[in-house]
Amino acid sequence: MAKVKPFHGVDRNVYHDNDKCVDGNNIEKENLRQGTGGKPKCQRCKGL
Image (cartoon, rainbow, N blue to C red):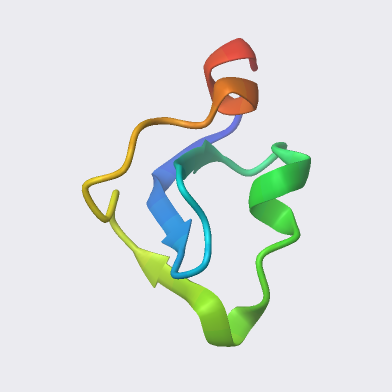
């Protein structure tokens, strides 16, 4: 498991905290923001 500081995409409904998450890695740089954004945790990150 590779936990990282929480991040989210402005156009996404969840936040991520694992650098192995495919969904998190697919967020374009211009849409990437630090923190949870008040969003729930990604189900894939929960499983990693």
